[in-house]
Amino acid sequence: MKRKRILIIDDEEGIRTTVSLLLQQRGHTTHAVGSGTEAEKLTREQAFDIVICDARLRDRDGLEVALQIKREQPTTRVIIFSGDTSGDRVAAAAHAAGTTLETLQKGDGPKRLFAIIDESRPK
Image 1 (cartoon, helix red, strand yellow):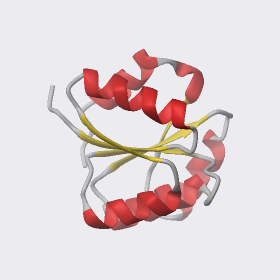
Image 2 (cartoon, rainbow, N blue to C red):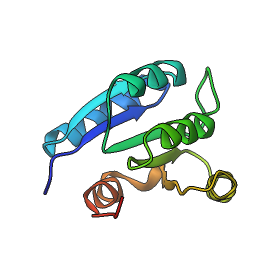
Image 3 (cartoon, one colour):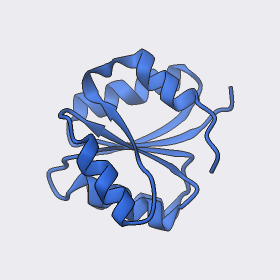
Image 4 (tube, rainbow, N blue to C red):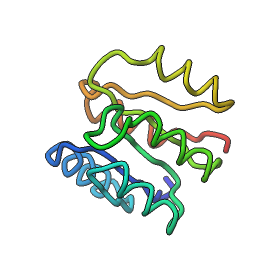
């Protein structure tokens, strides 16, 4: 398994800390931020293999943040992390932007997270 550089964007500190620790235990390098503003600043300075972004951030629409990151880093896998069933909204927004985003429900648990992170995807 290739180690990946992963950015976690979630305004809930407990979630971003837990996800970050779980991925670090699997050998990945993680950066965790609590806002869309912090994420945009960081992604302008560094490239990531994967970005996991909460669909609803306090300062910005997480979907818009995710799409902006995808425009700036088109080879980065961007996963929308959601506590609700916003899959249709994500798919429609991504299609309108001419790209794809993956989705992960917050209640899916670590096994599903690991499966998504460990998948080989063409860039």
